[in-house]
Image (cartoon, rainbow, N blue to C red; front, side, top):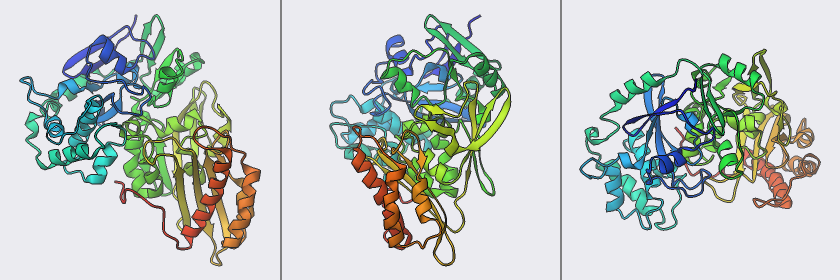
Length: 488
């Protein structure tokens, strides 16, 4: 018996029994439903032309988030509400206030990117009644335009927040209670398996079911946010079978701030984690606002970023510098290890085929510590890291180094600590002379490669300069430049 994926598309209930494991939401919208307002630009979650909203139930409440439909798989939509640009205008053709503001402010020229911008602004309109300039720009980080220069689009966002009409006009606000009831009725009580000619997709009902599936399916690919796996399909044309979707598992969605640190479930997205991390470890929160665009942060998970083991993943270096611990789970139970020990070699992690990342524990920086994270990329927003350095320093009362942990991404085949540099600093006075001498030890720790993001020489010099920058900031030089003063 073949199960089905059930969700709401605009106002219609959808039930799909014949779904490819890696069929994207964008292909479904354009090819199956001819909803061509949603555009394909980059097919890698970069340009935002394919932006739609996905509503999901969290703790009984309905939240809508902007996502990149080009890398969002149909299997991840079970029990959700998909909203496209076609759903915004009234049946008589009256434009939604967000759409009308784009017209009034001349926010569209060629028009290709416009639906994506409208959907991103609509997501902001639903979640923030009075956004300031920084919040508007943050909401638009994941949308690119070649024509307007963004200023008219920002003005449209400002206009619609000042002239906000009754929410009774809005197609989502006036049907919220009805949609919640329909989504509750769609929640699956058992594991779903959907089979097509190209393979199977599986939606487990619980962590226990997930563990059993992985034990029986050693070739399975786990998908949480698909911000990385999506590119395996759209750019590398990889065939994945079976695919196991975990973004719906409530057991993986919790984030708890305790006395000594934060426990983060593997399914917690960057967006969901941001408020707690901003309150407890604001340095890491500022980094999160530079990971992809809003759509990527709404889909991507910290657990997935770690599990994939990319050497340029943004979250591992600061978490390693803080001494984070990872919990893995399988049918045999759980095991915990230091995050830095999880990364073995390029493409190889200390995770068996039947294990999955369950949670992460991130200690708070020591009360007397100096902690900083620096991301170097060609573009400030929505760009992949060339070099990322994280520093956690503790000094004694005589200003000697009692403990220091330095971790880098983009410098080796895995996220890696600079242990030779650390050894040169431990026990010595925190001074310019000490730091200058320790710079030489980088050559023993790292031999970075050259690629289109940066040369080996650039990476090595940048890493050394980041240590110097960290020292200068700890002794009173101007702090790290921040575009957004507050993250909340």
